[in-house]
Image (cartoon, rainbow, N blue to C red; front, side, top):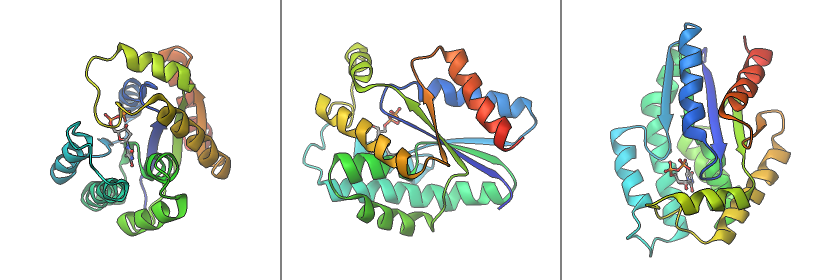
Length: 206
Ligand code: TYD
C-alpha cells in the first residue's frame, strides 16, 4: 500500500484531539491528502456502534461484547475507509486503533492480550500502523483532568484504578512495540508536543 497509516493513542484526557487536528493541518500544508478518522466510529455504521458502546445506560455490557463491538466498528472502518485511502496514497490518521483494544479490553478488562489480538486480526486483516504516537499522561493527571469534565461517557466514568490499569497496559504494549510506538510527554505545551510528533515523522518518512 502506498499511503501512510498513523495512529494516536493515549489515556482519556491526554490531549489527542488537539494534536490530531494540528497534525492534519501540518500534513495538508505539506501537500498530502489527509484523512482523519476516529475510533470507535469513523463510518455511519461505526458511529452507531460507538453510541451503543459509550452509552452510560449500558452498564450491564459484558466485556467480550464490548471487545467485539470495538472490533466490529474497526472492521467497517478498515474496509470502508482506511484500506481504500491507503491504496489511493493518502495519509490516514486514526484516533485510536487496535492498541486501544489490547490495552482497554485485553489488559484493563482482563480479557487477555492474545484473545484481543486474534479478534482484531480478523477485523483488520492484520493491518498495522506505520507509526503510532502515545501521548503519555501520568494517571494522576488524567484523573485530575477527568474531574474538570462535566459529562462523562461509560468508559470515562470508570473508577480511578481502571485509569491506572490502562496506563500500565500501555507501558507493557510500548515495551513490546518500541520501534513503532513513539512516546510523547503529554505534560509539555501543545506546541512542544506537536513539534515532537513532527520531528519523529520527518526523521522517518519525509
Ligand atoms: P472517546 O470519547 O473517543 O475518548 P478519547 O477522546 O479519550 O479517545 O471514547 C473512546 C473510549 O473508548 C475511550 O475511553 C477509550 C475506549 N476504547 C476502548 O476501550 N477500546 C478501543 O478499542 C477503543 C478504540 C477505544
